[in-house]
Each structure stands twice: as C-alpha cells, then as structure tokens.
Image 1 (cartoon, rainbow, N blue to C red):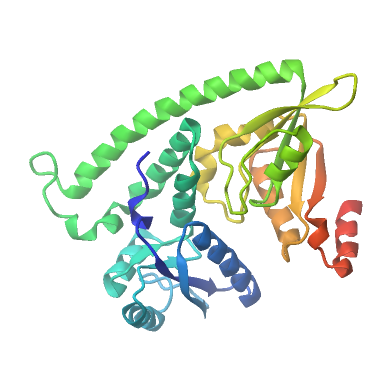
Image 2: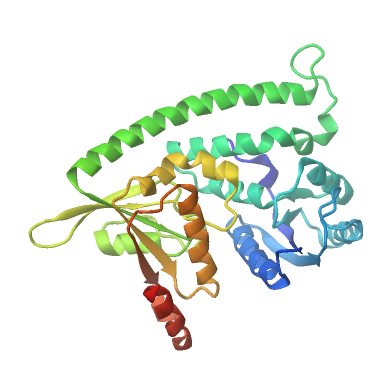
Length: 337
C-alpha cells in the first residue's frame, strides 16, 4: 500500500504538548510520554519536548505565536525534520506552522496513522489504514501541499486541490468497496466459528501483552513485539481446555489507546467487531504501567463506543513480576470492583 508521505524520511522530531483548562500539567506530561513512545515506534529520534500551559488555544498556531517562533529557532539550530503535536490540529494551524518553521508538522492522528501503515501486513489492515488516511487527509489538502494549491490540475481550469479531491473521491469508492467485501468475509468467518466453539476475544491497551497471553494459552506462534500497535489484524487460535477436548476460539485484536482518532475508530470497525461478537472478553492490563488505571478507563471508553455494555469481561493483569509490591493493594481493589 502507499505509505503516508508526510512521515517518510523523518529522523529527528520535536514533541509538543499543551496543558489547558480540563487538562492538568501532569496529564499533559503523561500524554506527552505516550507520544514519545509513539514517535519511537515510528522510528523518530526525539530532539526535545515542549509543554505549554494555555488558557485558550491559538487559532493560528494552536500554541502561542511566541512559542511557535521558539520552535522555528529550535528547528534551525538542531537539524529537526518534524514537529509532532500531541493533539489534533486544524488544517489552518498545520499550514501556518509548516510555513513558519519550515518543518513537517504532524499531529497525534497523523503519527498514529503512520504507525498503522508501517504495521499493516494483511490486505484487511491495509484497506482499513487507507480508508482512515483518506478521511484524515480530505479536509487538509491545502496543508499537505500548500504551495501547489493554485497550480493547474489534471483538467483544464482545475486547481491542484480540486484534482486531488477528485482523485481522493475515486480512491475512497474503491477502498470502501474492498472494505465491504472484507466485512462480509469476516462476518461469515465469525458465524462459522461461533457455531462451533465458545468465542473469547482479547482486548486491552496497546502493548499490554495480549499476543503474549495468546501464545501462552494456545501454544502456537503469534507475532509478539514490544512496541505499540504490533497487532492490527485479528488472529484466532483454537484453545483446548481439558482432556475432553472442550474447545474455545481465542482471538487477538488491535490494541486501544487514549483519544483513538475517530477516523481510525470508524475505519477499524470490521476488526473491532471481533469484540462485539465475542461470548467473553479478556481485558488484558499491563499492571506494571504507571498509569494502568487510566489505560483501563481508555479501554472501557472504546468498548462503550462499540456499545458493549452487558458482555462478560474478565480483567487479566499481566506483567505482575514487574509490579512494585506496594502497588499490589491498588490492583486488588480494582479486582474487587
């Protein structure tokens, strides 16, 4: 599949977060730490982290104009390729920042899209990433090539943006048709599995250890990588519970994350349907993570968007060998609740 061009060849990046009403400085720092992990997964070298406290967001630059000028100087002095924001920017903000700093501007959604593109190994995942990219880029055409916005396009009298929008419309129709075929095939496969065995789906925050648990339970080889979003396509394995060969079908699913971009959520509904149609969910939690409670909340938020409210969910705490003994009581309380 075509890779997302905005994130290609980026080696050195500045990470930017904003604390604003409703988002404490501590929350902003924790979120920026997660952005750093995302940037590392995408292969970026972190040059500097910047957090600004603002009472209101700047409509032109998101951050203040003075801070934007500081970023411009940092880019020039440190051979920086890109500035990555831990928020979604408007097309105008992206364009203004790019023209001011002479660096590529990525927001949180675009960075996650890039990681998804890197990890999309199957046709299903590739189609879903392409659809998410189309939905992201459509309102931002000026941003992705601001200098060509007024150049002639493929037809007489067309601007570059008009030509690009027409091409995107055609591409969206093609990808949509492919996704519908995939959804039908996945639905048939789920129906067949459901008729023959109890369905269990692993859900959880990205990199919580779902694939490791799946390998341990099934005894079969599945992809295991210590990085975010290593699994994008559902993988199912038969697991036999006892000598009588009572069987369940265990399915791994894409990991969740805080503030999962809406266009990604919508594009991956076919994959997320594995959770909707399961008989039981195993919610895998990285107990060693310092913000595991907020990660649990983030997973519940995604499940709520999928309208999963009355399905049985079993919490599975992973990586307990890395947990500080002082925190075990906190974990026990969540089990009791």
